Length: 640
Ligand code: BES
Ligand code: ZN
Image (tube, rainbow, N blue to C red; front, side):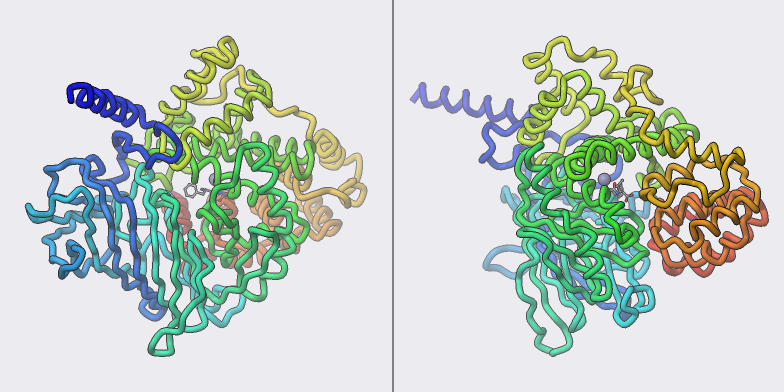
């Protein structure tokens, strides 16, 4: 008896220690309950309750631009005395809340919405009765979203490729899931989910989940019903939904593309390398653990290049260039299946754990599939872009572990977590050698699979690894400089500077008048070479030289969205008027923030440009996603 008790004591001590360390004793154990870190972007009381599973019912109403919905949240109780559940919401119309009890009627709950606190939204507080003391409870919230929900974009038929059917998509990262689901909206909490989605008949719903269930026609004959199951626990920012006139094309044994009918063939051709990408990543960093990997190609208003929604990345159509030259973006979203979706940043301060690792993995995939030269060109472009950002950023925004308290994560978007994060991993590679770095990364993905971790947990893990595997490889002070200091450390290992020497030489020859545009050796240039050429032209180029360049290469009419972007920037800086109609067409058809933001910024440099920007924006804004619109709003508000 005594022995038993002490054995039990030892066991529970071990469990407690494992819990404190946030570690699973073995990989088949349930996810450990790590202690909550404070997340300044969530109201949720995750020390008292933790969501384990979410059951959604969504009715998609395109006329009202609303989701009519119920969310059943199954919560684990961590604090036996807690009787209050606090959830995150933004702009939700809450119709009621209940405690759901098996074999019993749902019990209405007292609930209240707090005052709106931008940028967080409103806390939704549910009061449980004293009797609700079980270790696991289910609460239900019935609600409607608002037409202006920040995480949803409702598109009219005219805003789609086909022009005949409306489209809806979600974008939950960073803190927008709360605008379409009341939940614990912090990446520290992971839940499985199921959903039943009712769409107008003929419109297909897809989610970041198993999409294989057959749709059923609803009883009224006017709706279709789709069912989804996500058996792997994911953070709230990865819950995603798309609804539209969608078709599917398989491109590999476990991959394919969903897109509007007029886009699906081109997309399937562009992304034919998907399976090779998955295999390359598996060889380097361990198994792909999510079953299928599909892409959803969105209409051009999608505010990002891509979003790594698990099993189903959301992708801008602006990467369909016709020559697969922009597929690094697919490599990036795929790589998040390891860095981000498997091992997740615990708060948005730790975003670099997602984006820096992923940018590193992305370049490794590109190197494996398309060779070192192309990876080096992408490295060089990434570094240039980072250096341009660093010129404008405040020191506090140049650190990897960035303090976002009191700020909207959307407002603090830069290349720092991406390219500086990538350079940090690159530096680790230079200290350890590639083979050992890969071993470390594989172990890291295994160790923290399906967990959310902080920068400091990562650092502890790295230190432990280094102690036994490479005791002298890394200097602690240098490590801290990378993570906590602004700028780029002077000991950073930068990509070789010669990736574009030939382009620099050609540009100089042309700029200095030794050759004319037709003599530029640019007929064979790839997208990357063109971007480097255009992005590094002098600030001022004479009109007639721009006209000459335009005549030689038809730049104003180029369809490649990235090259067009770089050309239009040159045109705006130089007030090259022949490109203005194209500029207007560009800004009114594309809503990808990274591509439109610099153009508006360049326009507002002059008062004449600011006027043009306002005129264009008036037409463009209704087509932009709330995230992009809010960015452009700030640019124009600050303009002359
Ligand atoms: N997860 C990001 C997008 C994101 C980040 C949305 C932070 C909201 C907040 C995605 O993986 C991403 O990084 N997309 C990039 C493309 C990539 C190739 C750099 C983008 O959209 O430009
Ligand atoms: Zn990313």
